[in-house]
Image (cartoon, rainbow, N blue to C red):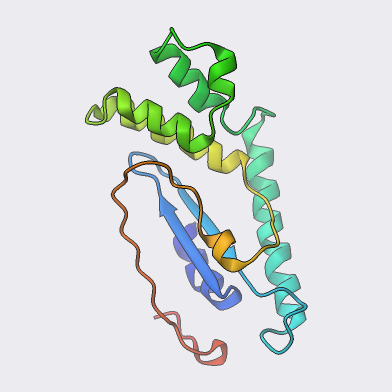
Length: 166
């Protein structure tokens, strides 16, 4: 479980971001470390071990998915079912956040609809899992789309050698 891996993630990665998707049992995990080229920041062996473990989790997630669908396919299909005047070609041009924003705009207080949207979003994140090398602000940040209620918490956990996980 994610709770069981929490301390390990904090021990192996400089930045850890959790994104819980309401009305689902899914939490998106984004991690970031300095690259091996950044001298003196982290032991290269630790970076390799952490990356290997995350790659194994990504591969397991993809194997469980049993599909080769586009990451946005479920969001797009939901939008097309609710807005039949929209063509498939138009919907395919929309980004993940644009699809989600248009879906939420239909009836933002409808819990049943929000559950469907969040489940489709969970599939988007699962199908988008992978590795990327870039500046940490680009890794941790993302286009979140329109208006959202977001609670962000950031706190230091101390030097790696002294982390207790508490």
